Amino acid sequence: MVATVRQTVVVHAGETREVEPLGIFGIPMWIKLSGTETGGTYAIIEDQTPPDMGPPLHRHSREDESFYVLEGEYVFEVDGERISALAGSSVYAPKGTAHRFQNVGATAGRLLVMVQPAGLDSFFVDIDDATRGAREPDLSVVGPIFEKHGLELLGPPLPGRSAATQPILEPAAAD
Image (tube, rainbow, N blue to C red; front, side, top):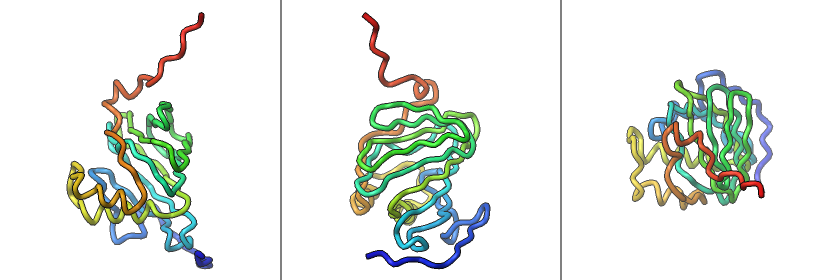
């Protein structure tokens, strides 16, 4: 059973629950609310994605993941469906779906990432601890961390900006 948390937590702009922002292969992240503060029920993370960057195709076995675009222009892929998302858009990737995203804008974009239950916050802390400063993942290092947190690495990030804006599936031709 998860303990009920009864404490107000305030994390101001630019602050994180960690000692410093995380650096996940060149993507800065701020844990705004961790599972520690919510009794494990959810976590909130801010992500500042540089142009043409985003995570590889992956699947969560434990967490539902929601994204709210604060700034920028993104393309998400959830179970093969490509979704364009500008500031003010939200995208939901339930646990068990294969998903990834990419900032397709010319400047850094910002996302608010909410996961339920918490756990992805701990995953990012573990990845940051193991790979701090690395620009490319070493599968021998990150693979066991993915497994520990119930994540499955399925494929590469989305291709470059021009290809990312193209749909994966063409509409069926009318007869």
